[in-house]
Amino acid sequence: MKPIDCEDLYSDGRHYDCQTKYLVEDIPFHLRQIKKYGGPVLELACGTGRITIPMAEKGIEITGLDVSETMLSHARKKAAKKGVNVEWIKADCRNFKLNKKFNLIFFPFNSITHLHDLKSLEACFSCVKEHLTHKGRFVIDVFNPHLDILMRDPSRRYQISQYSDPDGKGTVIITENNIYDTATQINRIKWYYSIGKEKDKFVVENNMRILFPQELDALLLYNGFTIETKFGNYDETPFDSASPKQLVVCYPK
Ligand SMILES: C[S@@+](CC[C@H](N)C(=O)[O-])C[C@H]1O[C@@H](n2cnc3c(N)ncnc32)[C@H](O)[C@@H]1O
Image: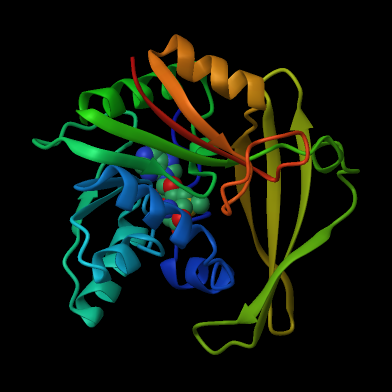
C-alpha cells in the first residue's frame, strides 16, 4: 500500500475549517441517508468534524475516524465546546478494527481520493464490510472528474480560497496548479499559500486519485458490494454525464 502523503495538507484544522466554511450542502444529504438506514454511524476520514458534529448535535450515535491527530484534536475541541458526544478514533481507514458494527458508514467529501492505489482501496473496502451490520449501507461521496480540470496547463495558477488567517496575520489566499498522471490516475495538485504580504509563504501537495464513474462502480462490484443507488448531486438527482458528484449508496452482497 502507498503511504499516506497528505499530512501537510491537514496540519492545522483551523485553516481547514476556514477553507470549507462555505460547504454545508452535503450535511442534509448525509442526514437523509442516516434517517433512511439508521445509526449507529461511522464517518471515515472525519477530519475536524465538519459533518460529524452537526450529526451528533441531532442526537445521532456517531463515530468519527481519521488518521490525522491534528484534525482530530481540533474536532475534539469543537465537540467539547458544543457539549456533543462523538467517539473519535485515530486510525487509518485502510486498517481499522472497532468492536462495533454500524448501520451506515460514510466516506464524504472526496476523502476516498487520498487512497492512491488498488491495495489501499481494497483494504478500506474490506474494513468497511467487516464493520457493517447485515442491513448496513456504505455511502461514498466523490466528485465526477472533469477532463478539462485534469488537463489544465500546469504553468497556470487558479485561486481556490480566500479567508482571514486564524492567527491574525492577514488574508490567506490559496492558488493551485496541477499536473495529471494518466497512468496512475493521480492528479498532483499544489496549493500555494500567500498570507498577508507574504506571497507563496508555503506550498503543500494535495494528490488525488481520480475515480472515473464506471471504474468506481466496477471497483465496488468486484470488492463485493451491490450498488443500490447512485446520485449525481446532494439533491439526489440520478447520476448522469452532467453530474458534478458521484454519491454511491451500496451494501455488501
Ligand atoms: C477532505 S478531508 C475531509 C474531512 C471531513 N470528512 C469533511 O468532510 O470535512 C480528508 C480527511 O481524510 C483524512 N485521511 C486521509 N487519508 C486517510 C486515511 N488513510 N485514513 C483515515 N483518514 C485519512 C485526512 O486526515 C483528512 O482529515
